[in-house]
Image (tube, one colour):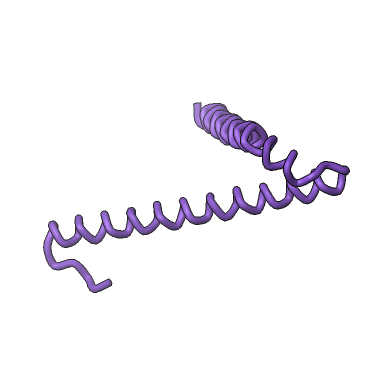
Length: 89
């Protein structure tokens, strides 16, 4: 990307970079979720379950997985905030 010469060009380039970062983030998230599904499926099958049962159970497992990840991220953010205030105030 060439260097911006005007404020408008700089803003357009910044928006393009943000859009690209968001697309990359979504792509990585989709890949991570697909890997989690494959891992869960492998565990399910190794435990004696069958593929059809897994596919039926996956939507709820996915919801629980995503909720757990959100909770962990929120807990981490809270811990960072608490640590920051303890160290600085």
